[in-house]
Length: 218
Image (tube, rainbow, N blue to C red; front, side, top):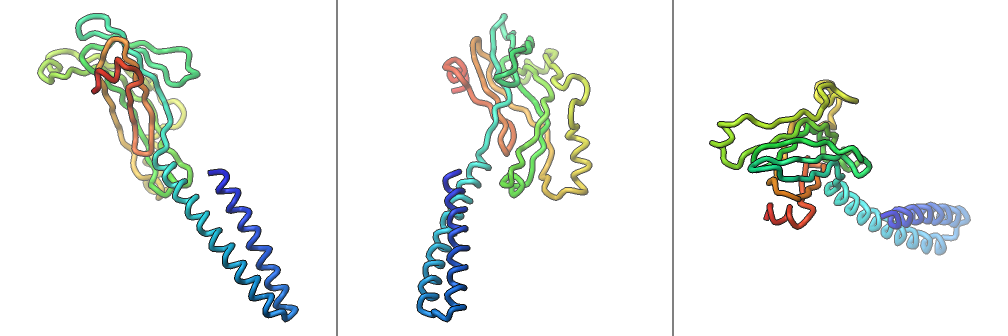
């Protein structure tokens, strides 16, 4: 994409030079030469518009399909419907956090601030704040009879920007905020499974990262 951007810049410069040459020829009353330069300018302008259109389409696609990894989840079975979940929030995060979850599935919840489509294209990405991690049972009746295993990921206090308060501020003042919502993603718990959680323009995404996780999902 950088090559297209450089090419469009070069063509824009070329259009300016051709335009200057065209005006110069007209001032000297060289009509025939001016017509030739105007045709050349039109051809270069059409090429510039074509490159700009291709660049715009590629940029739009990349922005709407943009994903950023935010967490890795590793599972180790401790007993029947009992697992240890290891959670790290980035590749540079060496200090993993450990949680004991009961059930058949793990769930990760977050608060997400989503921008309007045109704001995404200008470079604004969805803003998130981790909320909680929990275990859940595949059988609803079983889950209703047992206490949930639930852990707070926010640390009990707001760190950095409080996006719930940001919404109240943005709601009345900034038109490029689409919505703010809570979202949870969940996957099966399986001994040795590894999942990666990412955030895209539509919210949280989770994918299996090894054969054990893929077998559990598919």
